[in-house]
Length: 173
Image 1 (spheres, one colour):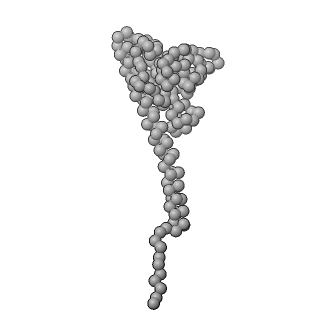
Image 2 (cartoon, helix red, strand yellow):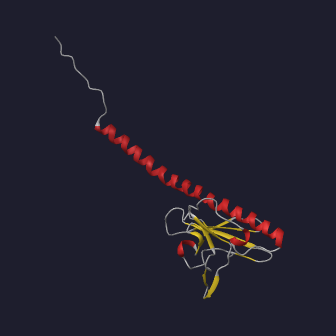
């Protein structure tokens, strides 16, 4: 009689370690890309709300031939709860030496209505080419938020002709 050799079916330890290595490499590539896509989708909040602010300002201008300097004048409110951004159309007050501070109630959004500025910051210098504010001929509204929990704030602005700008992009910092 011959002995029948019995073979166990399964994976060796080396094969399992190779699979784990491959999964780790794929995860290392995919997770940072996913975080960027997630941050870009959060920017949609700023774009949508700034579009609403522009529409409200244009309606106000068509009635009174002047742009509003705060949200109470145009009746603008955030629909639901702002998840990532604070919004303002109010100009900061110069404190001299290039520093600015925000008037009380100038902000609406993340920190309630009214807020005191982006994340409690008194500094109006947040990387904008044009500071927010409104005159009889123009306005600039801004949105400031932290969309990926790092020190850099994401900044968006829009004006009376609909120029939407992202001077400080927190996604690609």
